[in-house]
Length: 395
Image: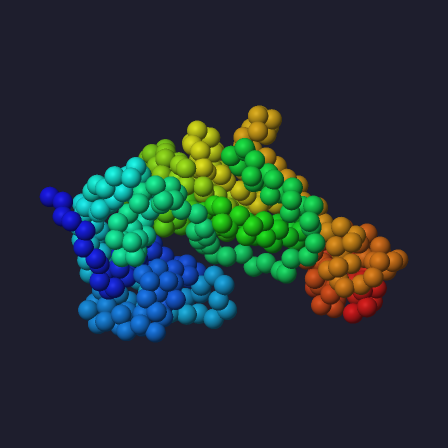
C-alpha cells in the first residue's frame, strides 16, 4: 500500500546515503562521499552538525567508522559505513520510499507518482528527489535532468606526476573519447605518462560524464573488477551486482546486467594498467565489449603497455577496422616539452638530452632530480652517461 510523501530525518538521510557504499568497507582507498564533508554535502547539512549526527548513529549501533585514504587527501581521514543493523534499517527506509507517493508536475498538470516511477522517468536519486521536495514542495519532472553526470569514483588511484605540455596529445585523445568507438586503448612504453595524460583528459569531461577509474595489474582478479563496478552502479542509483555475484550467477548474466544498467548513463569505465593480465579478465573484457556495443551511453578506456601480448588483448584487427575499438600510441615528450619539463633553454644540451631519453617523462624526472643511481638502474645509461645528462640539464 502506497503512502503520501513525508520528509526524512537527517539521521535517516545519512543511512540512505551510506547504503550504496558498503562494498568499500574493506578497501584501503575509498570515495570522498563517505567522509564527514562528503556526507554533509550529500544530505544538505552544515559540517559543524554532521559530527553530532554521526556520533548519535554510532551510539545506536547503526554506523561505524575507521580511517582510510581518500582520493585528493594526503592524510587518512575518518570514513563511515553502515553496520549490519544500519544496513537493515537503511533497507527498511528504502523499501518505504520505493512505494511513497510524491506530488509531481507532468506536462503542466499536477499528479502523484511513486519514487520508482520518478526514478525511471528522470534517473534522479532518492536524496535528489527529497531535496527538491523540501525546497520546492513539488517535483517538476520536466525540469529534472534525465541522467546524472559528474560522478567520479576512483578505485586505487594512480600515482601521477605534474603534467607538462602535450597539447596535441590532449586534443587527439579527447577527440577519440568523444568519438563513436566503444573502447579506446592508450598504448605507451612504461614511464611515458599514460596515466597522467588520461587523468588530465578525463578531468576535462567532469561535467559531461560519470567515470569509474580502476587500476589493474597482472594479479588483479575478476572480483576486484566487479566490486567497484557494483559500487559505481549504486552511486548512479542503479542496482548493484552483489545479488548476482553472491548468488552464483553465470558471467554472461553479470555482464549483461552491467551493460543494461549502465545504458544511457553517460559513463566511462577506465582500466588503468592493462597488459599481461589473467585470462579471466581477457574473457571478461571480450564479452563486455560485445555487450556494450549495443548499448548507448557507455564507453571503456584503457591504458596499456606498448608490449601487451596479443593473447592478452580483448579485441582484434577487425574491431579496429570497423571502429569498435580506437587505438592511440603515445610517444615521449616533444623537444619543446622536454625543455619545458626540465626548465632549460633550447640548444645543443637540450637536443642531446631529448635524443638520449626519447622524451621519456620518467627518465626526465630522474634527470631533473639529479638521481644518477636511478638513471643507471634504468638500464638505459652508463654511470658516465647518467652524470652527463644531469650535467647537460644544469642540475
